[in-house]
Image 1 (cartoon, rainbow, N blue to C red):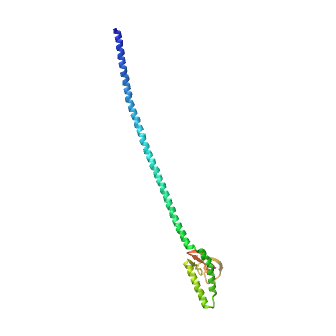
Image 2: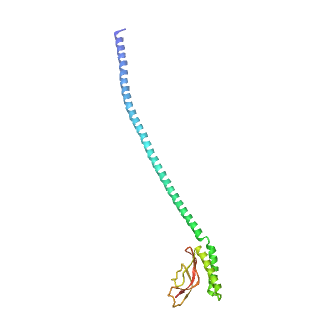
Image 3: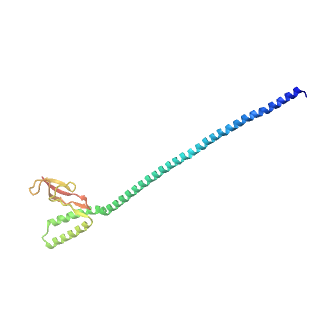
Length: 203
């Protein structure tokens, strides 16, 4: 081998050795840069999932609170409805006890009116008159126990809630606006007017 061939071969060997060194250095630098970028991307990726669960937790808490408020409101409405139902039922029972026999008593008022007329007519037979009075008192006692009361009218101020005026009359016995006469007695049943008094009113 000549000197020139040796020189060419040595130069080629040197060039072959130098190229990998430079390329390796660049690759090393690239490899060193890539992990840094990947680390940053990994950190960003790691931060995002951490925020999502927090948001999901807050949303879940708000939903739970809203559900609890709705259930509380529903419970309060049910309680109010139940209390109203109890009051209504108690009132209906009370009305049944107080006014369950209203129709029967109203139908008996005509009998009571006839008793009054018979007593007002009087009788020459003293014992008969006394017997009528006793029966009347007994009859009124039964009706009073059932809640019947007579409306006081004669001499009282005219009250359209309890009195029904059938006529006006001139009289010096009573002041104007006073009940001067009773045509038919009125009655209440447990404080409820079942028949107003038919009255005359002084002018």
